[in-house]
Amino acid sequence: MIWITGCGGKQTLARAAARKELDVEVIEAELAKLAEQPIEKDWRSAPLAEIIDHIIVRYHDRHREQLPELILQATKVERVHADKPSVPKGLTKYLTMLHEELSSHMMKEEQILFPMIKQGMGSQAMGPISVMESEHDEAGELLEVIKHTTNNVTPPPEALHHLESDV
Image (cartoon, rainbow, N blue to C red; front, side, top):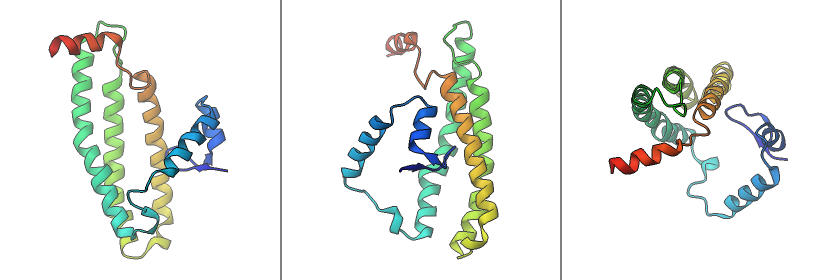
């Protein structure tokens, strides 16, 4: 049995797939293909400090860089194309909410949780960890709203026309 953890996790793969109306056998086949590929880095055996540094560089720094730009772009799209029914109305609001939530979350991880873990106090970090897990779930819910608002992050057909005319 495969268990899913992370945003909205702690459930079986079958349950997660059913909730999203996905075929669990297709997902398992894709996972099997991934398992056959060489692992770039086996994070299971990496020191915790290295994992933490990777999380900060790979995810936190990227979110800090990319989310403000996404918010600017969403603001522009909603303003310029407000009259079009296919415009993802509310996207700016949801991205701003996500940015605020993640900024607060990442600060807590970097200032409280990660230093505790790096100092070998992981067993005393259960309180902060449960808070972080709850915040991951909340961010996951916001991502679901964003996916719904953007039709699973699919540009409307006329967006391609505008892009081609700009090029």
